[in-house]
View 1 (tube, rainbow, N blue to C red):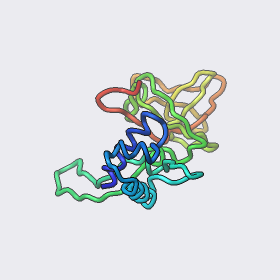
View 2: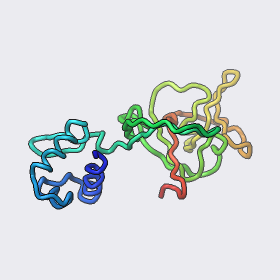
View 3: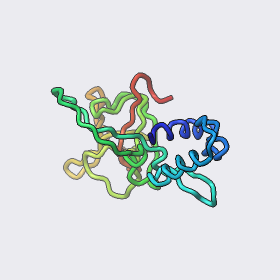
Length: 191
């Protein structure tokens, strides 16, 4: 039932960047009773999808969440086990939104780490970086995404593609962030 209510509201929100008024909901749900709309709204408030702010309806993080219906086996097939919870992608991919940003990947130097041309990477800025982290680095005033390596007291960068040599700084190596997640749209790349 909640998806039947949520889907038209999400569609309206995508188009108008706001939730509909009660009058607009009468048309959206093709009902004549404001009481029915009130019950729909109350159900969504009770389930945490929307809230009232200054007597206006406002979406919560849950409004933008996607249902997680269970688990699926990627090995041998098993009987389906279904459960229902909700997850927002920003909460899943981004632990510290105030210290994070996205970059679009260009090039093939990280393909063996599962990072491909056109992918989006979530970069988290933080102060301490360890060997084997995939980092956003500035090496001799040029920016790149590579694996941080430390060997015999020397810090350098390594690609995840054997076609590329190790990158040793001639002057300076600065680390600006670490990759926390990779996002890829199948059937096409992010534009």
